[in-house]
Length: 432
Ligand SMILES: *Cc1c(COP(=O)(O)O)cnc(C)c1O
Image 1 (tube, rainbow, N blue to C red):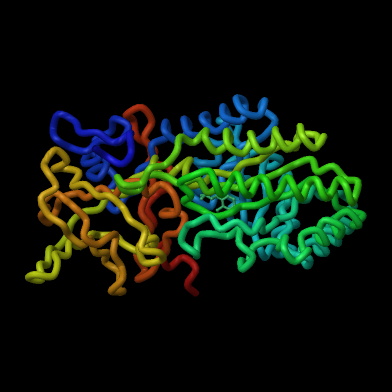
Image 2: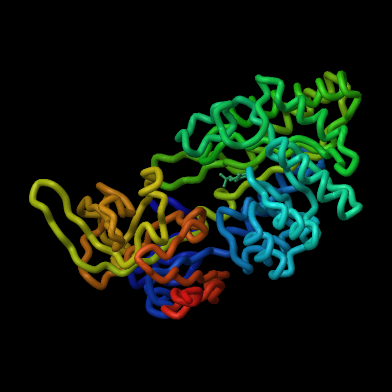
């Protein structure tokens, strides 16, 4: 009935998330409000860890791609769940470090890391750095030399796999800003380059083929291609690659028609390829890293809004305005992402109309969705938008000088604040 299994209806007919009444949360913390189901996040972490134990003898690590949802509390939870993290900026590194995260389990990504960020990563003890281009390899070697250390480096490879998703969120093909291309020989040259650097420890290879992928074919193809490169490196450079980071990208259910696989199917599929390839080619099995982001937090989150005005344009559509929009959820305006919505205080009523949920920002395209089935709602009702746990809070902005919403975590029915709502003074805090 609901797109996420943590949603339900209580005896009052109100929508609940992990047992907590969403209308009570809206009342207590105000709207717009992000609500995250902590138990579901922890269960997702455990599913991924167990999949490595089950299919790959535990010889791997799960890293949460923290760009999907980053705040101190999520890094504390990842630390408790014994999960690594993937970070891409000084801001993410700083947040995790300040949360007390063990940074040796952090992987530093990105296609344009500054020297300051690399130094910060090394100061805080980041365990692995993934180099994206030749300039970065040279910079890492230079910084390691200055610091008289050796930096563990992985190389980001474009395996040339089309992940069959929207072109803005597929990254494994040759025309991508991320990584070294295989087809042109660039990737192999980069491996040679790292091996020739005095201050770099070549750990292995990384690829990430895209996002919101709902089957395993792309991952299987990428794993095969990466194993072929590992084999070529062994044969021609006499070097055995120790680590293979296969990225993230597992999709979730946003609307009923999405049909995601159980999360452990990811590791099941790639482990089969790697195990078989290593056995047949007499290669030591690499340590495997996987980097799920969306699938750890996406279905765990919802956003609550208060309904404002209704505007019916005869024979065209009905607009329902809410007190948030592209500033807290830019995914519709970015790539027409689809969502499911429920009137939280009328959750047991049938969805009797189709509406456009409009945000309050000054952009015509600022919508949560068009043609969305919804219960009939009036000003003051609470709308819950489902599966907003990934890439909503982390992509939020202060456009129109709107304050970013608070984030609340719900754990077995009890709620606590994880991120305070921004205040108007926060909005002007950097203005001179
Ligand atoms: C974004 C990203 C991920 C996570 O992608 P999801 O779709 O959120 O699972 C993993 N690795 C890298 C390098 C990424 O850029």
